[in-house]
Amino acid sequence: AETIKSAGGRALLVGGSVRDMVMGIVPKDFDVEVYGLPAEKVEEIVCAAGDVNEVGKSFGILKINLGNGLDIDVSLPRTDSKIGDGHVDFKVKTDPKMSIAEAAKRRDFTMNSIAADPLSGELHDPYHGVEDIQNRILRVTDPERFQDDALRVLRGVQFIGRFGLEVEKDTAQLMQKMAPLMKNLSKERILGEWEKLLTQSPKPSLGLAAAMTLGILHEIHPQLPPLCETPQEPKWHPEGDVWIHTLMTVNEAAKIAQRENLDEKTGFTLMLSSLCHDLGKPTTTEVRDDRLISHAHEPAAKEPTLQFLDSLGVDNLTREKVISLVVNHLAPTTLYMSETIRGDKVSDGAIRKLAMRLHPATIQELVLLCEADHLGRGEFAPDQK
Image (cartoon, rainbow, N blue to C red; front, side):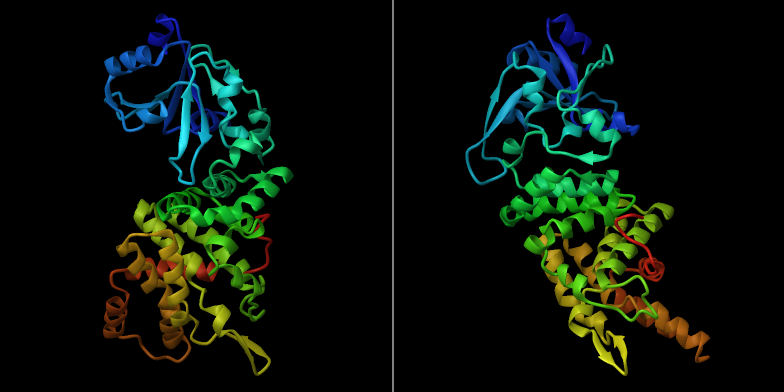
């Protein structure tokens, strides 16, 4: 920023790093927008500061590595005009003389439209993003430009889960309207937002509940909505239907992943398993002897889980592990009841057979899923807790 200032320009921090700092979160990534200098001069300054990756140059972005583990995206103020159906089909027009307010207009939500001067500490907040952060409100910055990319709908969902936000009414209506457009998104882009929702949210249920209410899951993940219509036996599940139980289980899994300090891959596997573990109940739940039962819902969950994972495009190892965990998630309870209630000692051979059935998942992962499933029941409103 000092170098750019000495050259007659001005460097502002923009986007997620400013949002995080306003929220009291230490940022991991930094985006810098440079005003008042032509692209050639900015590129000259950036290239002199560290190793530059020009992968985003066509969008007016230079990625610089400063050699201390810090990566910064440097760009000029710009406008993006949609010219096709793909996520890269934009006409980018940079303008170093553009106003801060006009440049911020292209950002998805008001909380991401704040700019900060790293030299003076001054905030530029033309769309009242700080106020929305303080009130925990998710609000679209510009409704017309927001519609240029349907992925922003799913980004909004993961922001709700990560930051505990409430969707502003007009924003909710716009996201609901755009939900059908998400069918055209690539699996890779959808997966990235799911990873953030499930692994970075203290309470993923907030984002999941919003995705259900806004019709997003109905459009791109039809395996999940039937859970809302599947009741459970109150004696064992006083919390209500399978969807409520799933939301509670996912929240417990998030706590467990943090408690166990699970690595990113293992944590994501646990979260996906907790989300999918009861996908077999809609097709197996019936009333028998005045009780609701879901006999054989473990194997019945295999096909909808496969469909869901395929819609995300997860890697093969994660896919295999999640399936193994889902179709065996009652095994620890069965073995426990066998020994404590019927008095049948569980042999080492039984444990070895379970380990073989689970592979490539592990017994440790199964136990964590079983714990989340056990704790994910009781009376509470998932959108409030």
